[in-house]
Image (cartoon, rainbow, N blue to C red; front, side, top):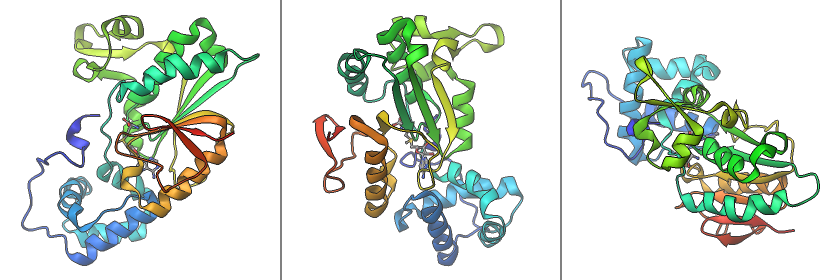
Length: 288
Ligand SMILES: C[S@@+](CC[C@H](N)C(=O)[O-])C[C@H]1O[C@@H](n2cnc3c(N)ncnc32)[C@H](O)[C@@H]1O
C-alpha cells in the first residue's frame, strides 16, 4: 500500500478548526481501537487520529467527533473495519527484509520438501495489501516447481478489508515492484497494456498458492495447524506487552515443533516467550 497509510508519514489532511477532537472523544476512540484491534494509541497519536478520522467524518457527513463516537457506540461492528483501516499502518513491500526470503529459499523450504509426503503451510498474519504473501508464494514456486500447487499454501490474513481488497486484486503500480528482481518480474507478473499500462498483475500460478481471509488477531482463528511458519512482521509493534505475549503463546501452539516465526526488523521475542530459539535475524524456531 502507498505510504499515505504510514503512521510515521507526514499527513496531508488539513486540520479543520471547526472540528475539534476533545480529550474524552480521543480517549473513547483509543480505548475502542485497543479493545477491538490491540493497537495502542498513545497521546502522541492524537494528531494522527485526528487527521485520519477527519476524512472518515467527511465521508459519513458527520460534523463532529462526538457524533462519530455516538456512531461507534451505536454500531461498533459496522464501524470497526473503516476505523481500523483508517488508523492502522498498512505500509509493506515485496521482498521486504529480503533475508527472510533468502532463509525460506535456502534453508526452510528445501528441508520441508525433503521429507516423505510433504505438506507445507505458511501463515502471513497481518498481510496488508498482499506483497508479503505473494513474495512467499513466489519463493515457494521457485523452490518447489510444479509440486508447489499440490504441497504448499500460504494463508494470508489481515484485519483491514481495504488492504485485503488490494491484495485480492493482485495488481500493483510498477513503483511498488522496486524489491522485485527483473527475472521475477518477468516470471511472476503480467504487464498491463492499454488502459492498464504502468500496472503489473500477479500471475495466476502465484495467486493459486495464496488464500486471503479477513481475520482479527485478537479474536478466534479458524486455522487448522500445525503450521510450518508464521510471518507476523511489523504488526505487533503497535500492541502492548500483554497482547504480544498472548499472541506469541498462541503462535507457539499453532506451529509444528521446529516451525518458524518471522518478526519485523524492530520486533523481538525477548522476554515475551520461552517457546522459541533465535536462529537468524528476527527468525525464531519453536523448540521441539
Ligand atoms: C505495517 S503492516 C505489515 C504488513 C506486512 N506484514 C509487512 O511486514 O510488510 C501491519 C498490518 O497489520 C494489520 N493489523 C493490525 N492490527 C491487526 C489485528 N488486530 N489483526 C489483524 N491484523 C492487524 C494492519 O491492518 C496492517 O495491514
